[in-house]
Image (tube, rainbow, N blue to C red; front, top):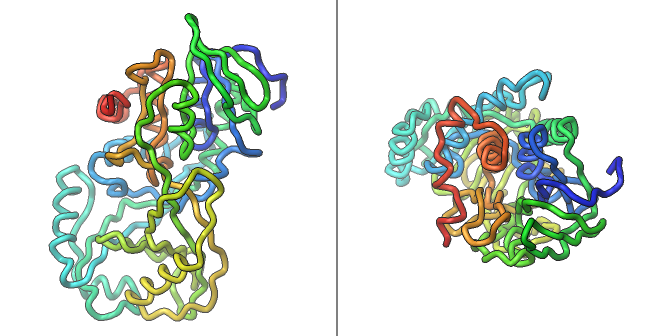
Length: 376
């Protein structure tokens, strides 16, 4: 913090990752905002460990409208927010074995009906686009709109915009206890006590714990570990290699420099909230799955990391006012799609808290489908 810890605020946002900082950026010009972050720096657990892609099909058809509506804000940001776009060219291929052709067809039908640019890819074209592809991988779809996201730049831009709007950020400030009173909340944090009219729960893997501390019922949000590795290959794989996603959810990988890829076994291992670390067995599983798809020798695992992805029971994001606890608002359960949907979720939730209603594609979304009231 660059100023003393405040004694009062309109909106206290618990968590300063992508969910909390995006909301703060949208809301700060209209309400007094304080973000409290338990770690030494914001974005440590999930935002800073993202696989960094924007893909309309990722997260499923019910998440797709949030992703699609966020495109313009990411590809053509307001110059006051960022002097360059956050999306970079990539494209993606959804692949399967011959016996998984029906799954690929269903994928195409589902997302084409949503207006997503997806199309079948012939086996010969797939082999041409993925050098070293092993026999049997003949079912594929192309999703050319897929992009990389510069996550670090987006998160930093949100924090800057929040600060310009007057928001404050306190790190090393976990929520310890909260007491609901007639006119708001008294909240004890690791940096002091603050009065707030509204608490926003943007605590990621800790969302249900924060809810319990505030007397709200949990929504069943659970964190899961996701493993990533940067692998150097003994094959001339181009840096522009598309994002390759298994239609059955066993892996994904993409180019990360000449002869290098980012690789995940697409694992979802239940894990307690905390500092997730990669397990060697998961990295080995990722490599085994990769080598079942392509004939690429692995020269070295240069980096490996893990992050937490938090899902509600129905795997949709949770944002909006708690139906039973006045002044308690959710912004959590954003799985692995929280970065690519952040502009839409931030604008919709900020409008509920006092910012103007967004227009365009974001304004056309009905946020009721994502309300915590669905768990009431």
